[in-house]
Image 1: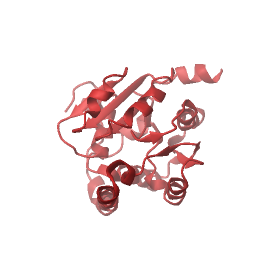
Image 2: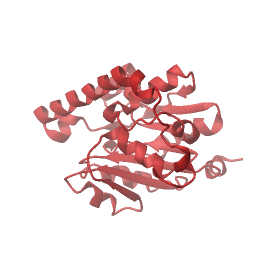
Image 3: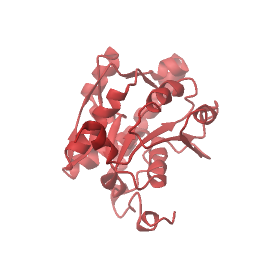
Length: 241
């Protein structure tokens, strides 16, 4: 069975959380929309004020507009709840530079080849030196992931995690001892916050992001105790709660 046929056996959904990414989102969507084996592309916009949702609607994608900014974790959780029959989800940042089909394939292919694998975490290589180094040192933060649908839908609800969502997913995977791979994504990078917002405002957003990551680590144990699954039985059978 060739690669294309194997990909066609899976329902693959790309989830792209956004917040004020109007200038950068088109580059990502132009790349993703060319990939024939992705069944659905969903942009989940967290109350952007710069027209990000309108930009997304120019492309053949589904746009979910949230009425408040509850963070990246809530956006991804909502995307999964809406697309709860996907075999594989691809999580993508909206500010990527140099995204190509090969990067997406690198995230998905290991999950198809190895049914025991729960998640892939992409690591930038030969993109931008600072970004590459940060991802090698702290892969727990990497946002480009392939995630097995059955696994992630059975996790405790992570809508509260904001920018700590990747930390949450990586920690759950480690503590439950599921298999994870780290494919290299050569030539891929993303815009730094200081580039997007200017130095001082960018620094503020960076500190805020790190704060949310640390909060996730501190609140992790408490939040997963008796916490409902991300997709409950009612949602699995079509009744959203």
